[in-house]
Length: 385
Image 1 (cartoon, rainbow, N blue to C red):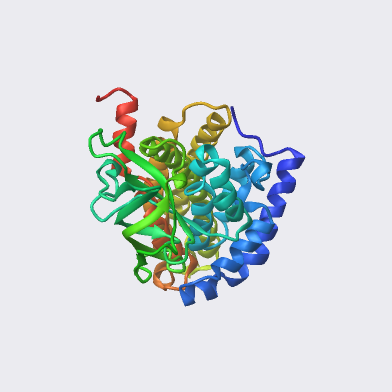
Image 2: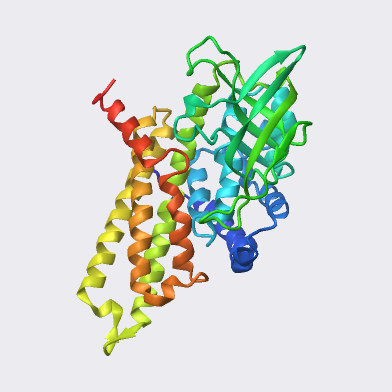
């Protein structure tokens, strides 16, 4: 199934998202990047009021009840908002920490955490990675034991986007010691104002400088057992499903950002003069940019195929992994080559191409590193057991 965004509903929706991005984000991005902070609570409430935080969620919990073709439009347009910091922070809310809660959470749990998150009144985060378990999710060490009617959580999570400000986390923990590492984990909603929760100062990152990322520590943190999302010990499975949405989100957003990188490079090289003519007039330059544009167009075709399969209800593990792999590779090569054509200006901190190069480097790491994508793909293609 090929996505078609040509219908009137799609066009109106795209216009609404573009208006939000052009009005509420782009005019302020440079200042937010300089301050290394954006007004997250204020912007989330505006996004919630605009319906952006619950596009695919059921109307019974405050969502719009639309399919993924609309969600992909939102992701595309936020990829053009000039700030990966903003797009990532909102993407965590829409496509990373809420899918399992929306699919498997009890009505009571959804009312308490999902509904206000869709409104933008609460901010969520996803707590999976640990200092010794990033790509190897099965090796997480955070424990969760039962005591009375509570879960008691001990451990810590690393590299948590929104972690400095989030009200709650969708946290992957070990709830069984005896079972295999793929069937001993649960996803637990943890209110981050709970006693025993501490957070580091925002981490000093290479990119996404305006987005808060923190370590979160749990020391005898009590939460009610009803805060378990879905079935106990099924958390690894649920998280693997959430990863598919995160990886597709990454591929879609990255495509828009790479298209933007090529667009501004063409504009700049048309104007920049060297040796009596524009940089773009050199055959090498326009040949390189032509090839980069072709590679990005192929990435777009791949994620459109993946999104179409998702809408049809097909298993997208292989396609989402391929799209994430290709996005991560192009995120390393396209901005670097484009920056080269900017010369010294591209090396300036305030240059948009410089920000894109810094921010896009994460695509090959976060949400499943390139090497993990290759491992999944080879297994899906039955190259290994």
